[in-house]
Amino acid sequence: MVIAPPGRVCHPPSMRLWPLALAVFLLGPAAQAEKVTSIAQYGVTWTFDQPYESGKFATGDHWVVGPVKVVSVSPAPTGTRHGSAVNPKGGRQAYDSRGGGFDATDAVTFPATLAPTSSLVSSVSKPEGSDPKNVGPMISQAVLTVVAGPLPPTALRPSYAGTFKQQLDTKQIDWSALPKLPAPSSKPDGAKLLQMADRPRIDHLSSWTIQHSCAEENWFNGDGAHACYGREVAAYVSSAALYVLLDTPEREELTLSMIQHGIDNYGVLKAGGTWEANGGHHNARKWPIVLAGRLLGDCDLLKVGLDYDDDQFGEDGHTYFGKSGKALFGMSCGPNQTYFQNGCSGSGAKDCRDPAELVDGCGDYRNCCTSAYWVGEMLSTLMLRSKKIWAHDAFFDYVDRWMSGDVSGGGAASSAFVDGMWKAHRQNLPTGADAEPTCTPGSGGNDAGVGGAVGAGGAAGTAGAGGGGASAGSGGKAGGSASGGAGGSSEDDGGCGCRSASPIGSPGALVALAAGAAALGLRLQRRRRGRRR
Picture (spheres, rainbow, N blue to C red):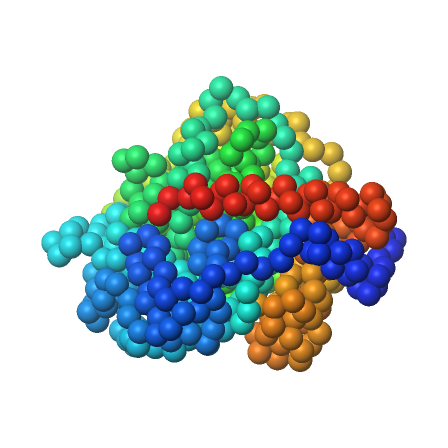
């Protein structure tokens, strides 16, 4: 779904919902659930007091209809290992005391009863004596989402963090926004990228101590790469950012995973988390949010660059326009700029900006761990015509300087693939105006709350149609996306639920709706069967 251009006329919801109802009748139930007494994923097993309805989101994580009583989790929490948290907050964690920001007050003890619109994050700790630096103290983490009613298999998981729980759907994705570029010989292994993107990356710590606080298998950045360090995260994200633009068999599955990554990161922001500029630690957290906003047309995600300033993202905090108007590298350090003032030697932060704002900051983190790893994110954002959504022009101008060789040590990207894509496409961008970072609230992809059917248009204070969704007063959003039930068409829906190429109520559009939804359902079924466990 994309933003409606000026003059677009949209029909009221009542004229758009009957084709959705007919499509559901033709295709079968939108939500599929089975009663279970336990759920296992990524080494974690949640056991309940009785059978509950359960199913999977489009990206493979589990939901359960609540309220639900979790009587135990395996491995069992000890207080300092194998920890669990509900709706974790930014800046602290209760999973493993060997990681940074440990706060036992957030730890969940069992049995515990969880209400709908809750996310339970549970972990598997590494054995005692493990060195967590760069690879973390945990083996894995899994997310269980408690919902108010059964969801369709096309539903995307709300963010694990905080209480801001959007219910978005794969049927909202505007696939036409992604070009299908020919894949170069330098492209990375698509299967390996899928493996890197497969699991949720629990990333709400807001501190450099994430360097030794992640779950290694969830943060897989490639064979031999450091799991927790931001440079390796950026290498993976930059490659994925460009890979989703290619015509490959893996692109749709990878795109879904990266959209989910963006939904998660946005939830971390809403929960008070940040990834401020800090050496090489906090790269590549913004691009997945920009991708998710661009492809889903969601009003909240689209405003990430407007609502959150330079203090939230490493790329933005490290780039600024200097006194001459040139985009420069360096974060604002206040009086702590002794390293730069001493000729890039001695003590002090090594990535501070020039106090006079005339030249780039020191080359230490600038050259080893940031600039070259930003190139894929920057180019992908331009190719997606999403620069306005990112909303920090200094980042784009600085990366151009880096790749032109105008920055000392610059002139190349982090990999041959990213370098080749830059040479092929930086001066050959798609035509047309950039997507705008705004849309009409309640009509651009928001929903009636977890458990409400996307596309049902649940009203404020009422349950979302088709799934008993939460009301706008209890965490949901008023006004569902009618396009959520529009069946995967890649046509422009104008950001308000209508399709410009053919009215959704026409016989031809309805056939296309049914066929598109069925095809998407089959792809998602194959995807869930093939996911790693």
